[in-house]
Each structure stands twice: as structure tokens, then as C-alpha cells.
Image (cartoon, rainbow, N blue to C red; front, side, top):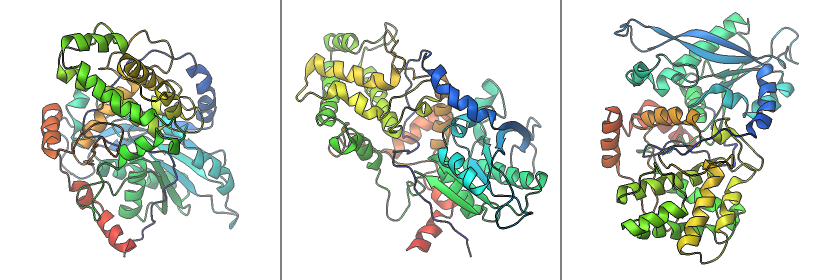
Amino acid sequence: MLYLLPVILLSAAVHAVAAQHSRPMGPWRPSNSFELASESSKHMLDLCKKHYRETTLDHFSWVPPPDGMSTYKQRFYVCDKYWHKSAASNTEKGPIFFYVGNEADVTLYLNNTGLMWESAAEFGALLVFAEHRYYGESKPYSGSKLRNNMQYLTAEQAMADYAELIAELKSDLQAEQSPVIGFGGSYGGMLASWMRMKYPHVLDGAIAGSAPIWAFPGEDPPVDSGAFAKIVTRDATPAGGSAKACAGNLRNAWKQLKEWGSNDEGRGHIKEVMQLCPAAKLSNDDDVDALAQWAQNAFDYLAMGDYPYTSNYMLNGQGVLPAYPMRTACQPLSQQGMVGAALLEGLHQAVGTFYNFSGHLPCYNYSEGPNPEGEEDDNFWDYQACTEMVMPFSRNGEDDMFWKQPWDLKAFGKQCKEQWGVSPRPYWAQIKSVTSVLCEWLR
């Protein structure tokens, strides 16, 4: 019998993961406001001790890797301020709250997982924040060698890392009787959920926020590939607290880009109104499409980070978004019936909420992102999306504020082959996990 804990969805913010394309990046400059935002982060880091452990590189083969490297250094943090003996016993230690790291530097989660910190004092818990292999400082290889050895970047390997770490910690700390509760959001929430299913003897419970474990092909009922775009759109309507005209103006802005982008004169107007940098090439339809994808990407991230307070989370700790950033982005698009240059100027200002968070950018380069820290993370997540994390995403321009973008597995596979030399396995996540068993169990 499987001992399963249903996923608890805690986050009201959209926190979906993956994309069917390589996520475009945008321009970055240092933000003066980051110094202020980092003060509380520094305080939280001061409450923890940083550790590294020699972690098995390939848990599922006894054959040494070709280069003979069988381990890598994995970073994790241990925070014991609140850890004490449980109320039920004068000898047993309190529980262990374990953050199941996902696709970024682990300090980002240490500084933004408030539920763990808030609950630690009440439960007398030890906090552990583990970093996912290939992200942050937990990279098996360096330089170009890392990209040439991506085969060890899988959810299965990461979960095995965490299972080993938990076992070692409990032994080293003489806390064998301490229950372990996994925490995670987005992909980290998926890992926490899957770990509870695959390693029930290691993880006694899991609290997962916005963890789309049922977002894969082959699920029953079938996944709605347009769900993410619909929720992003809702954030840009009065239902999400945004200006009434915002979503409609955005839907028309893409049409304006396409119309002007069809000829040299129009593309010149786009470059001027959108304030693109001289190096930002805009000479054909493909360039215009890339610009539109870059702008669309901003609204995806603003929805995912549409918190009711200022936050540096969506900017990888390297800048600050305002409270309810989608509402801020919608202000330049709040006038009914915007057209032409005024409409694209509104789009320019709207995406600036994300890409120009510092307020100091002189121009935009749509081939770059808000900061360099997130670029590698996005690239490596793209590899995961191209292998086992194949989650269909689509938009239709009717139920959402974008334009028609059907899910095309064949085109997606071609892109993955060109970029990474791999072919997606769209049903692997559903097959490898016990999600299908959970579906039946919940019926």
C-alpha cells in the first residue's frame, strides 16, 4: 500500500513551471533598491549554516562515469534557531522541515519560503534548504563541460540526492525519530509531492504550493494546455485588480506589432516606440515574433510573481518588483481603445515593470533578460522541459489576452533536438511517477 499525502495548494499566485519554448531573456542593470531589499535576506542567511556534501552523481548506475567523477558538491543550509525537544517528549527532537530545492539558487528559496520560517517556531522545527543539482553552486562540472554533461539533470536524480541527504542528516544529528516534512513550490512542490510518493519512508509529509503534477500528457482528465494563459489573463482584468481595458489593449497590441512588423517602415516605428537598442535586430517576421514572445514573457512572470507585497523573488534576488506588479504593468494600458503608437508605447511601459525594474534602462534588447543570474537557470530548465518535464502550453487569443499559439509537440521536439540534441519523452513524467495511482486513489 502506498502512503500518500494529498498535495496542499497554498499559493494564490500563479506559479506554474516550464514552457514549450526557450524562454527569452531581457536587459539587466544593477538596481539600487536591491541593497534595501537584501537586508532581510541577509538576516535570514545569518540564521543558517552553509554546508556542502559529496553527493552521488549517478544514483542509478554502478558503472563509473566516463571521466571517473562519481560525486559532486551539493550545497545546503541548516537553520537550527527554533529546533528543540518536542512537547510530547523530553528526549525526542523536533521535526525537520526540508525545502525540496528547485531550479534556482537555493538562497532564493531560503529567503522566500515564509511558511517554513513562520511554522518553525511553533513546531520547534529544524529547517533545511537543499539545492537542486546543476543550479546555484551545486554544479557537477564547470564551464562548457557542464553543458556537455546534462544527462544527470533529472528529477529522479535530484530526489535521490535529497533522500540521501535526509538520511545522513538524521544520522549525524541523532534525529532518527524526527519526522521530516517536505516543502516546495512550483517544480519544488512537484518534487516534494513525488518524494512523498516514492520515498514515503524518508518523507513523512509534503506541503506543495502550485505544484502542477497533473499537467502532463496522458493524465485523466486531460490537462488543459491553455489554463496557464487564462490565469495570467485573469490577473490583467478587474477580477485580478487590474484596469478594465488592460487585457483588451494587450490583445490588440500583438496585432499592432504584427501589422507594423510586416514591412521595413513599420519595423522602424516599432524600434522607435518600443525603444529598442541599436543592437536589437528587427529586420523580418521572425525578429518581430521574438520581440512579441519577449514581451509576452514579462506578463507570464508578473502573474507568477503577483504578490501583494514588494518582492525580489521573480528577479532572482537581483531587483525588486512592486506589490501587485501586474496592476502596475496594466496602468499604461488602462485607457479604452488605445491604438497605434500610443498602444505600443503602453506595451513598452508595461513590460518595463519587469525588464526595467531599476528604472534606469536607456533601451531594450529583446534577446536578453532582466538579469544574468536567471539566464542559466532558464536554459537548464529548458533542458528539463525538453526531456522529462514536457508540459503542454498553448494560447488561443480568445480565452486569453495573447495570440494563437497551439501546442505543437513535433515543433517542440525539433527545437529540443536543435538546442540540446535530445528528444522529449512526453509521457515519461506520468509513467515514472505514481501520479496515475494517486489519481485513482483520489477518485
